Amino acid sequence: MASQTQQLENPAPPTLGYPTEVYERRHFNENNGSLTIYFKKLAAVLGSLFGPRGGRFMNNPYGAFQDSTDQVAANTTTAYAVTFNTTDFSNGVTIASGSRLTVADAGIWNCQFSIQIKNTTNDGQDAEIWFRKNGTNIDNSNSRFHLPPRKSSGDPSHLIAAMNFFASMNSTDYLEIMWRVSDVGVSIEHYAAGTSPTRPATPSAIVTMSFVSNIT
Image (cartoon, rainbow, N blue to C red):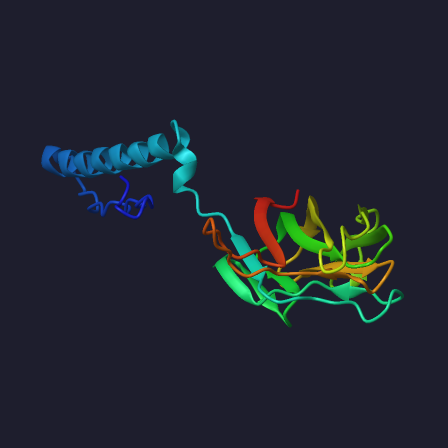
């Protein structure tokens, strides 16, 4: 059976009486009735879980985070970690030290990000974004994004960098999203809510972590 919070209720095992030394029909009927009720409840739970839309009863680990600040690079030869200051959802994933996406459960995880980048220079510029696990770069995880020159003074060019990446992680492992730029005129930018029409604020960075599978 499903509760109002869309969680399946695990049926309690039946309490069966001890058999008597000689066969008693009453004892047999009581135990048989308890087992029948239990297996009916168990079948209902399994039917709900494996039936149409049964996935709504699953409680997989996940996390969603965003940042509401500008993030800048002091130079072009340093790798910086993208930081997050807001937790939207957290179930087995937490943010540590502002940038470390830390998981509570071992498995294959899918990390997806969306990063708002701007270029204030008169030239086209590059930004590179990749992943680190436990402080070590993950091989073949880098992506390069090209930003066109600014449109005019005070009107920078913009780009959304987005991708997803699967990572094998153990309990308490963490991922970081790293970035570097070809010019310090490239930064990660947030924007306040707008008017005419009314529209929401633009986070500088958004990231989600979703549990995919246990490690085989």
